[in-house]
Image (cartoon, rainbow, N blue to C red; front, side):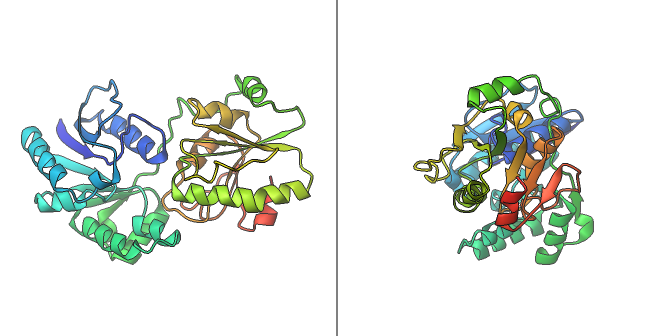
Length: 324
């Protein structure tokens, strides 16, 4: 059995966002045929059978080029002697390059494109960093055919170097289930004739911060014009970098982080993803589709996701609100 070291900038045991869920589920699957050594931030640790090192705090400065972390990685690699190293996200690529180690790179997003779409001024730096990480990788894994095309186009990579592994969904959790629908609707105080509109995700993630502003400035006003009977429920960790702090509306309910988002998805009438930036494929859309729930998204929000009878696309905000 091959020993595979997986290095992640996120703690997959938390499972509080799409990146953590991808790392957790792929690691779980790989552990069936490999001896896994996981390296991730300190914090919650699962009861899985594989070994986990947690040598750094969950802070941005610890996730990229970092000489203290580089030294810790050197010691862990020397001790474990892995046959392969898999890097989740490109951020620690330079650490491994300096250690003289080749690796498999799991590209959850095309990172520079994600930064560029948000208008970030540092996207050219991210581009160069990601380019190096991709060039030194022995193999690259990405989440969709769309992302594969971007990687070939922007980094001039050999197509044979890139493999697609779509974002997995935990179907033991996300499946059609009406058992708790009445309980959730009662908890939210929804009337029988009110439509339950759901938006959820990691709320401090910039594309979701943008989406909250779109809900505030574009979607809610249009729904009010149409005199719709609804409640828009926002679930997720964070406060939208402060945008939810003073966001008050008679038809808005902010629940924060919930333990079982699957119950809210199943109880909802529609899940919306009004995103205008980001990259990769949105695991929240895949989770909602696994519950056979209607999803209304922008084209960018649903980028890389295969056609599905429950998925509708709309990029005009007035028409978007009209389809809720």
